[in-house]
Length: 266
Image (cartoon, rainbow, N blue to C red):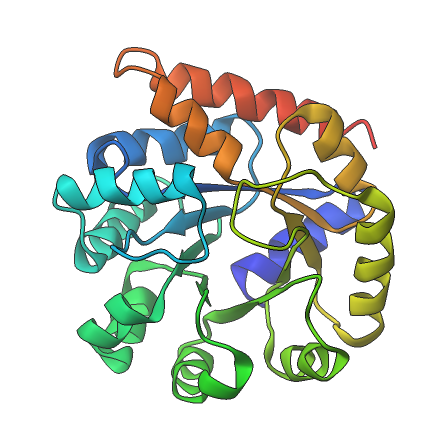
């Protein structure tokens, strides 16, 4: 059983929902990212999505685009992100880590090289934003061989045929992006989220996490009632962006703890 599957099993037994924060590796720098990862665990996160910075993050809004720019300006690369996970594993062997990013850096490194290194350093799942199921065959096969989970996105515009494709391939969990457009935009329609998640669960046998548009404890609690996991990204990256070096870890820890407390009230 993968670390991700084990985590969801533990949460299910205790009647709790998963909290999955997203941060961009290398924002504001790799040393701080390592400290932030530990802070996320201390404040109640269950799985960490670690963004691989990319120069053309077309699915991301301005907040996460700026995080990628800061990380790249500081010299963060995919290879250094993998080194970061290895360092984190020296102090934490329990918290699942999902790498989230775009195909270009992975293909530049080489799929087999990437997956081999990811397995060696302790990555648990990979989500490639711009790999639809029909284009992900080589990566999925390599991940499966190394027992790394393949995470997929589903959106309000996803056709049922695509949901079926994802259902065949997804392991770990699926990530339902609850708004059309780019990350960090708009407002959640909870009734629509409820309908969509129920539709997805008819076909998908792994847990369903919901993200995009979650900015506070109230919204996180509402989404937790409808799903297996709450994913929070843009609002968290905003917290990192507006904090200075002396208080960024404390601010992030306090914010995520407030989300954890809210989710546990469901």
